[in-house]
Image (cartoon, rainbow, N blue to C red; front, side, top):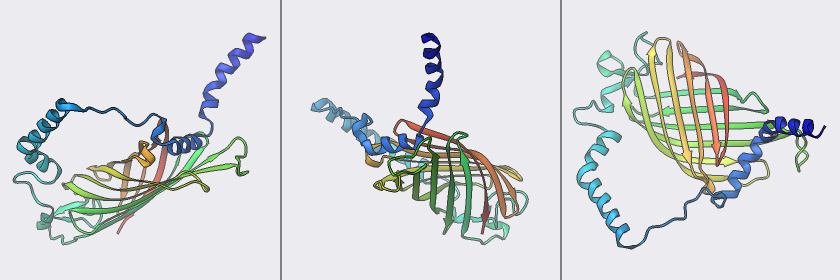
Length: 276
C-alpha cells in the first residue's frame, strides 16, 4: 500500500507544479533580483581597465561604421523616403506593406490594429491587443496589452477564484529593412507589469525587435519580442504567427510566450486584424 501511495504522489507531481502559474509570475517579479537573477561579480584593478580600453578602441576605430550600417543604413542602400506604404498588404496582389514610390503610391502613413485570444490549454487564458502607427516610412509607434487570467483550484486570500496578470508595452521602432517582401524593425520603450489587483505596478525600459515576411499572397509570417528587467527581474514577451490576408483584413494563428524570472507560460493564439 505504501508503494502505491508513493507512486501516486510521483505521478501527481507535474500536476501540482503546474498549479497557479500567475502566482509564480507574481512571485518572481515581487522577489526582484534578490532571487538570484542579479550578477554581483565585479572586476577591479588594472587588468579590467585595460580590457575596457581595448573594447572602446575596437568599437570607435574598427566597429563603429559597420555597427551604424547594421542598425541604420548601409552604403548605397535605399533610404526610407524612397518607399511608400501600400494601402494594405497585397493590395496590388504582389507587394507587401512597402512599395517603391515610382509605382504612383504616395501613401506616407500606416495604421494596423489587431487582437487575439490565447490559452495554454490548462488554466491560463487571456487576450492581447496591439496598435501600431507609422507616421512616416522610417518610424513606428506601438502600444500592446496582454491580459492573463487563471482559474484557481481554491479561492485566494482575497476570496477570488480567478487570478490576474497583465503586461503593457509602449514602444517605438525604427524600420530598418523596408523591402516590398520583408520588414525588420528594432527599437525600445517602456514595459509595465501589473501582477494583480492589489499589487504594485512594475516598470522597466525595454528593447524590442520584430519582422514580417510577406511570402506570397495571401500569406505572411510575423514575429516580435520585448525584453525588460522590472524590479531587476528578466521579463520577456514574444510571439510568432502565420497571417492570412483578406484584402484589408487578416486572420492569424500562432504562439504567444510570456516569461518572468524562471516562470514561463507558452500559449496558442488565434486572432484577427485590420489596416487603415
